Length: 402
Image (tube, rainbow, N blue to C red):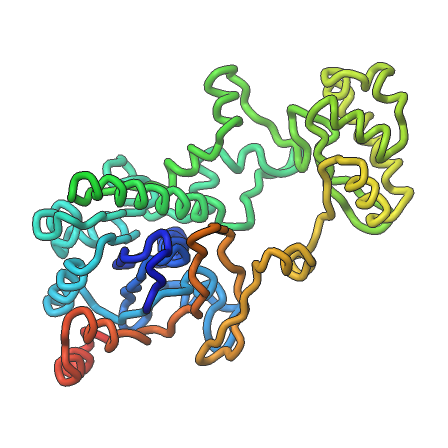
């Protein structure tokens, strides 16, 4: 896949052995910035998410499609000796390796970092796992909702008095992908100085803890265990979802200036700015339930669009509680160019959510549809390893490649 020379990661080649979400999202982010991604998949089953359907389009699981644009797929069984040698040959031509197998999968085949670092000293080897390679739980599998539970994140999610709720998105996988991309780019900069690669041990559990941010700091330093508040926020009010006459909106009034704007310009109750108990932050927090009920009663009198216009004009943070369809078809989504349509061999016109990165001098690559399983095996083995058609055909007949 030819990449523009001016892309941020142009010239970087990644051997992507990862599956499901955290690893593939990481390498897709790198691909957006110009890196060449060689996605190595099991020749029979491919990435686990290829079978995670419905939903699907053109016979392809949309789960897989969501995290694998701009990549070339090579079907390779590296557990067999011949496949292992192809792995090493590809690793020699790559700058970065990303894998997220359980502990032991790579070491049993002498493909873990300790086993290959002398043979490939230049290689940046990013290993993504549930608990980290030196954790007492290193042998255990782990998935996003489990890490949400174990990190404490679920404990304060949901309505007061109800069961804890997981975030419906794979938010820990997504955060981990961002940390992985960040760590790899840091290692690339380090290699420019030292000439050597290094091992990156990235755990979903660690990433889940790190994104507790202010909640974690509140417990560690003030001993405050967070409680369930539903859509509200403990440090400010009104901050949450409110129903209007037609549809809900979300309002975030986080400081005295915004409270003044909200009272004067939105609900037109200027006396609430100066009169107790709502004239101070402490007063508003201490009387949260009564204040929320009062604001809710006011907002229910008019339709959503009426209040949204007043919120925008009044300079108050707020917005519609949209459906996914409303968000993806919103005019600002189109204005930012966040939806792209590209050709796909089985889907036809494949629509995707694009990269949020905006560079003034080195724009992200034009998106290419996620690959079919083994779609680029012949091309990669020919271009990078100088294999001929007969040799590839023999490997395919033996089930080493697809």
